[in-house]
Figure 1: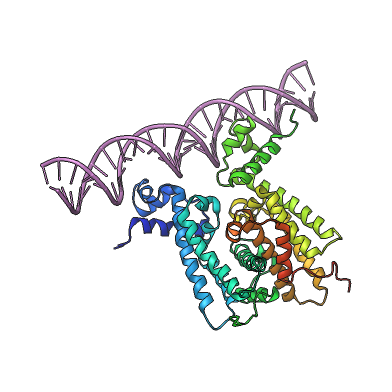
Figure 2: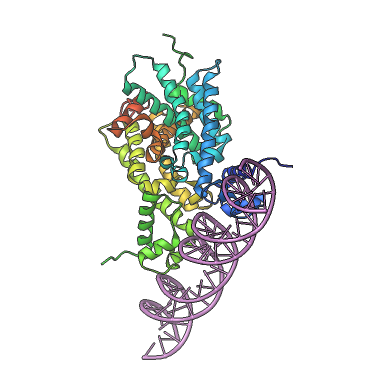
Length: 198
Length: 198
DNA sequence: CCGCTGCCTTGACAACGTCAAGAGTCGATC
DNA sequence: GATCGACTCTTGACGTTGTCAAGGCAGCGG
């Protein structure tokens, strides 16, 4: 029935497992067994265990870039807030990917240039957005500070919500997106005109 | 010479290893060998491998609470900014601890009430600070939003700086503390009077 | 028909976490 | 002073893991 390749099967199984149980307990041999092949079959598609994580990270950053670009492009809301929301939404909807993407010890960004490249595309959406927002006359420092603030806020929200202690601490969150918007407003990152025309 | 117990020796070695190579590659047997004892000796002090992580998390949150309280108490600066700085400073100065403290799959906060307790003390410093800052008349929602904003910003900065892709992306950071302060100012979380007297 | 390449299997190895049982050293009790 | 038990550590074993090495087997161009 399944026309998918072994590579895809393994990747999907791995992402599912990671979303449910975290990356550390992922077993090369288990995913092989689950796919009904020998324990060395996946080894042929991924050079080693961390190769799976590199592949997941690469695919994840691709999806991430798409999500961020789509959010920025939608015309009916503040693009900064939309980016923040998309960042958090992605983390929660694809925690299997997200967890791997930002665990540098797993995907070894430094030694995996192809992952580094797709990751850069994602991050460029953020910093380019800040660039556009502040306009030409903005200083390098202004851009750095603004981009750092926005990125840190998004990433902090995402990680604290995924498996962080935020919700246990401040109580159940009825409407998560409303909270994200409120935080954006609180920090002055939202509420700007959709695109600074002049 | 060393009068320290095996428990302390193992713990210190583990934290050092984690700071250098991350938590996943930590080997029960290696720390035992490094301490010059049999591979089962540490097993007596920590019920299992995750017991080491639980102990590290507990100790780490203790240090974290101290650091946050000290920062809040210092009278010569904005306490909100001081808390942010302390959060980030702690993460960078004690990455061995920090990485474990916020990896819920390692220390299993839910099943380790003693870790949960000391962790709560740390987080209470943050939310109590927001409570004091906003005063009595603040609504529950206002407090939640403000606390979430501050916490997310601090945590995002910390995690992005520890092993995140921030610095590779926005360029080398000459003065990290200045960046943290600038971000605080940008987001309106700093610049308040040191203590809202009335 | 030969050989090559891509995909997968089988077999082995060291290292790992963990269970089980035992040895040594203490202080308290009789 | 001998006996017991608690505490601390050792030794040995088991199953599982990631990885190396070698072989099998399709399909396909010469």
